[in-house]
Length: 380
Image (cartoon, rainbow, N blue to C red; front, side, top):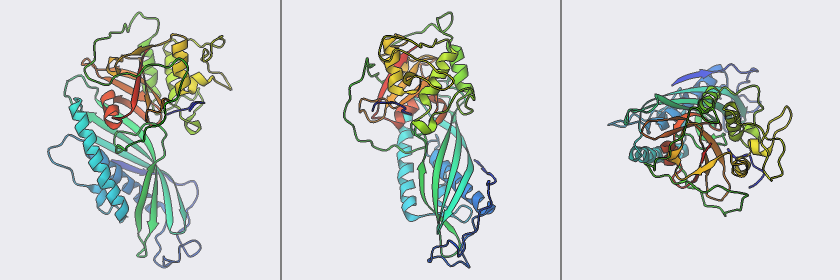
């Protein structure tokens, strides 16, 4: 996600403090304290199972099946139902995700199975409203269409769910939103984003095409200046378990480019601490780092200035160790950085990245979720 100066198993974790029941002390006048639902371990578990049903339902819309799976999210889960408004929203989401599935099929990709695990991280109650913050970990199995796909892709995402107490002592799920700053995970519906105003940038890279197949542009992976296998190994080791040797920037605009820089350094990129060029340095220290280390646009400008990378004409030309960046709304300012950690023999790059933490997601999957974004590909 952008950090730039310029513009299904369910596990409910034990809470750090004892949660009080929804009682007369803080219940809404519309809820009878005698029948008010209790916010305790059992309720927390019910919130988690409801979240699991919701995300499993979305993911099921992506699977390659002859018949549609039952819509588990639309049924009562642990006594909790979706509100009428959220039911309509989820119906629209599933329809959108079926569109994503169709776009993926046209690009030669499909999923045969999926598994979702939801962890309830914390909860809060205020009046008749409860909020649950959960972590979703989903793994999808690639269908062997070309035969060289990796086994799986996966991601870890964070969500905020809102529940409203009912007069009969139950809860109803009334809202859900993603709290991650990176690109939407594959089981999030596609939304239209208004196009922004194009801005100027220093030594900018050209956009890359997204058509498949792409013209051959082979890369020497062994005996080269850099160790591309080491870049991929690092990226896949720390995609969800962050390297404690580095600071995190998730809450300061996004960690995607910080993680990318770490991967490149692991493969032999040398730090540059002094340069006469604007955006000519790239380094990380004990207490500070350059903007080019953590900023999406600044990283691009550095690589162009220092000739550390060359633009690729098409995203499908990327090989292991190559980089893709996205401009979500085509406003001229890049928003997200990813590294290629695997490439199939049929020419499909698979990307690993932070925000949302994701493992081996195909370029085709990203394009299917973001059909109207701008893409930039870099040969490292």
